[in-house]
Image (cartoon, rainbow, N blue to C red; front, side, top):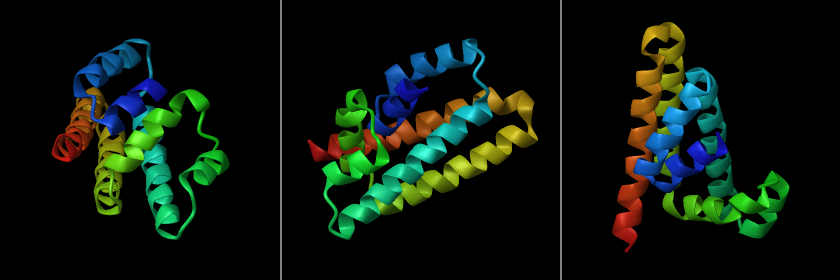
Length: 130
């Protein structure tokens, strides 16, 4: 699931699609995956707020216990996502989680659309930064 989270929030839409397909084939529940994405979005939001208050990224990573193999991806994500974009992502993820719980027959589709939407949003920011 970590690879999926990193691909979504890093804007790697093509890689995200294959990782998502694999996760669903392995039996991961869409609501569980959305919950993991939501927790990560809150982590990024809190990181942005902590950075605004003057804390260092290294200190935040240490406190948040970011796994060393994910540090580069985490830093990229922090650079791509603004507070307002993260708030929108959190709203979208919350709505998607509710949708997957209310209509389990469409859960895979809801998850896929949400992941693609977030990955494309991150990708747009990355493309503008070039």
